[in-house]
Amino acid sequence: MPDGDPDARAPHPALGLNEAVHQKTRLALLTLLDEAGRADFTYLKRTLDLTDGNLGRHIDVLTTQGLVETTKEFIGRRPRTWVTITRHGEQALAAEMDVLATLVDRFRTNGTTTRDGS
Image (cartoon, rainbow, N blue to C red):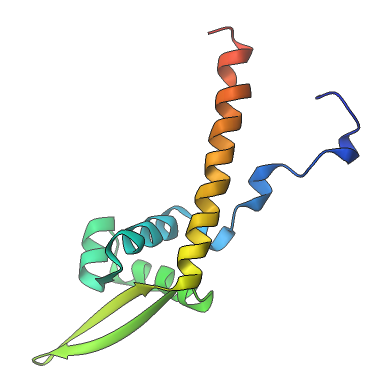
């Protein structure tokens, strides 16, 4: 146990992880969308190796949280769904990456390498 009063310590940084963002597939979706700005459903499905239903469910979660928006258009008679990261999504992703960076820094400073002597 670390020195000092446990009640006086700041909360652990991992408590700052956003459950909607942190889930592996949703984090990958937001990262892809942050890089591309927007992407179509088929590209996301293929890139992340997901089924239609699985991808659709993750997009629904992100949409409900205001992190992405979807638009539909028709090319000829074929529908095409586009997914775009929102400003709120960009901010949530940046906050998540900041927490992850803090955790990585803590691990490198205090992690297993200092405990096992390597």
